Image (cartoon, rainbow, N blue to C red; front, top):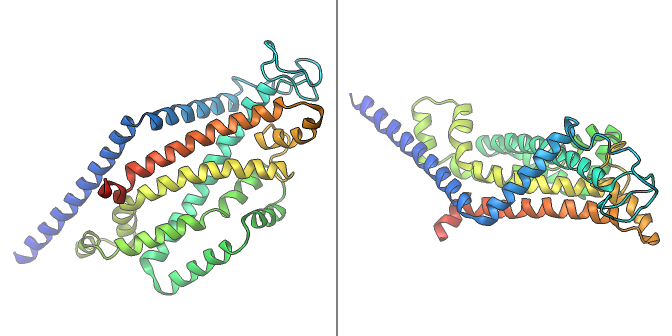
Length: 302
């Protein structure tokens, strides 16, 4: 009878913890809806995602490679951002570049998040030799200059869009892994995890059912930060000739523009940088809003 009462108290404690977690998420969502900058940022990001989907399905910008005028026509009412050296519309190339930017942001962020969360959970929860091995691994990766590491991975995998996605994904997980590891080490000794263990919950259930939901705000914030970093990294790599091949991207447009500026042709550079600036700014604003809404420490200070 005493054992039955103890288990009931433990279950009640876990249920209270789960309800508290749900209320925190609801409070975070309500906070985001009240933040005008966050709402505006989400609308901008949603617009970019919609454009990416429409270009991917060929609804818009499918004829981006078509000649619409002479070489290097300046911006006009007919061609808002003019034409490139081959007479192609710079606006259509910029719109087509949204597909690459959103794609690389989502795919590489997902890859790095899965690796970082899995290894961080494993290291922080089990500790010991497992922790030492994972810490050594991400410390070794972090000690290599990021651009040099990207160069090395791309050279091994070969140039191309798939290689670029993989290279950015498998080299960018250490910061998230480090954060998740530290949070898991704090949470695994808390009462709600000990209560789950007392009820017979296995390691996997404790890790993914109880601990992960309570640190998931960190994952979301880091995902938004990784998203914009991936976009900027693609631009840098494309500018250096190691990015995407055969399709428009903002990086390749900026790379082409480096020789055009001497001739006074600025519109391709202007279109690509403006499109990237708006998206990265929206991601930055949303990341700050997510941090303010989801970080329990900031709530406590408020």
